[in-house]
Amino acid sequence: MSEKLANPAPLGLMGFGMTTVLLNLHNAGLFPLGSMILAVGLFYGGIAQIIAGVMEWKQGNTFGTTAFISFGSFWLSLVALVVMPSMGWAPAPDTSAMVAYLVMWGIFTGVMFIGTLRINRALQFIFGSLTILFFLLALGDALDSSVIKQIAGYEGIVCGFAAIYTALAQVLNELYGRTVAPLGPVE
Image 1: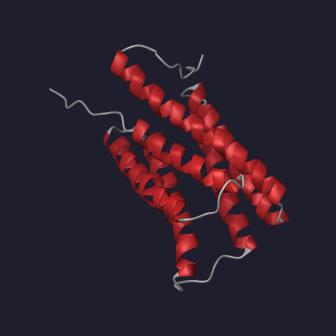
Image 2: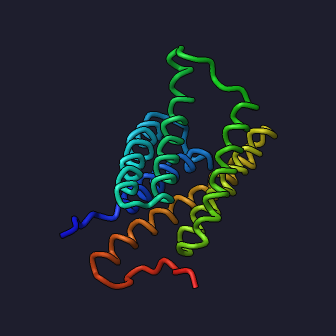
């Protein structure tokens, strides 16, 4: 008799989605970057996603493992980029370093988007909009444009809410044993 394992994707998607919404409320200019965003980034965006990634590994899901552990590590590294300089552990990254950081994450996310073409429309939207978000943030930094960064913030809010919807849809669909909230299967 095989062991029934829970679907870890909703946990990872919620960790990603809620943290992404909160950070992008800041990017949109609605409030300053502070301990609330950093704490959520560390624990829910970082640690919870890594846990979800390990759970995906247990289920043999290479895509889920790679996505959740990578994006969990993204959040941990982003918090470190803010906290380490304030603690005197390392200098703050200069603009070109942040642009390179964001471009690399954009490239990674773009390749992962290609993988979503075999999964469902909801994940396609999340990964597609996240790819755009990383490149908008990189462009905003490269051009030192508060307007581009604000646009990126609003785009990131949409991306984060898409992840929250997808997570909750998976939970509700499993609980009810039918499609309560559609995910748009690949046709």
